[in-house]
Image (cartoon, rainbow, N blue to C red; front, side):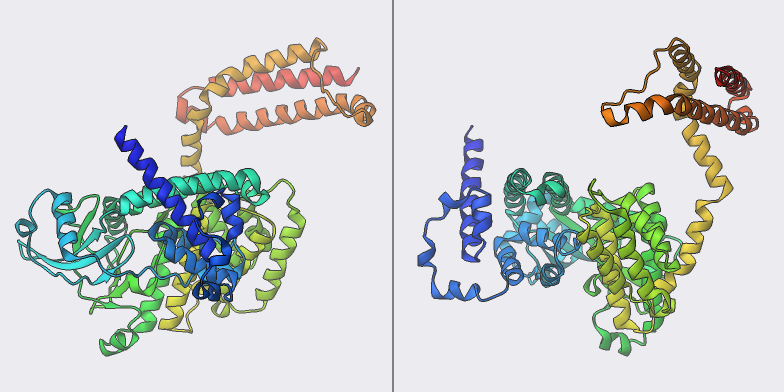
Length: 553
């Protein structure tokens, strides 16, 4: 009971703090939408001169500064929103991309206590040396260099004390905000804000559990264990917990340090091609990709191997999502508006009112823009950004993993262009696209897919003859009806009903004949019997006879 009271009290104080910060930055609309007005202790007329200067900034600028002030949960929310050009106008996207996740470091005494509590042993029992000054400090964690007792150099990522409690409160508050926005605004209903809040809660839960990041590192290392172009630092699981991640220290040059790359004699063109190829493989083939490949998270070893660091944000694609992304990339490579629009419609949540012809026209305009341009000169950042703007225009909500892919491609393109402006990701994607196309229609893959799906329909095949018999009884008994509630269509329905019935049953009959032909070989090999074929043929001939008899009436 006492714990619940404390949690409610903490939530109340956080609501009040959020209300004040919203008011301070001029977002009174949200204060009233989220029913926070009573929590603002001071009236608007008492806003100080320093606060009034904030109002001279643009709304996107004030929005970014507000998120920064609200702390780690809202900074992370802003970073995710910066990838959602299908939800926000471009001026907000551009501003949110400037969000800085840098904060003063936590005292070393608090960090050492956090490590000892998480690993359940004294710091001196694990590390021969632990640097007090962090390499980096962010809102969720900070990173320190250390040396294990066994001599290995490591980096230790330590969660800031109190972050888990704060993010838990913030996530619940954001869920409440999402509910109110979805209830009271058309925008919230179109984009299912409550569903997005749930997705964000899952993201925060993963990012505050450093074991998840460790598993991500192991997965990508396994996927590239035979690729000598890539290196993923090792995770020391004996010294890793929910709040602490210990990984191998890698002495490498960050990709944002161009002078150091030149001094080390690194071939920047080769490195750029490797980065583009590896990320495309992660997305299109493995389905597990680094979703935040900015230059600070990428490095290169003296031998030229590419190092992926900070694997806290990883995208996971289902086979279906990977197929849709592959179709979109193939459409960009082939300059096919039809392929790109089909991929977007299949991936996204399309409003019932969307004009698909207008959508395809907008994508066709993009196609015409890039049609005469060689692949090597296509700017993927520009084309993908324009594609997201088309989705925004037509109110198409794309899945989170799709926008993560697009953001990763745009970020990678920026890094590639800094390394070598002559290299185009679209050009590098072409051979991978051809490979995907070949694999998609590979006979063995299709046969394996058929073998996988057939057992799922075994019950349907078993019940099918009885269901057909029941439908035939309804048809011959005169109880098979097509009801229309629109009076204007009654006469048309009455005149066309018998032809529709014959067309439908003719289609079913033809399908059964084709199915029998397909199963003549595959069915015997899978089930070692021709009973399925016999059932299909008998049913097909029965339907054909019935159609011939009724056509004479």
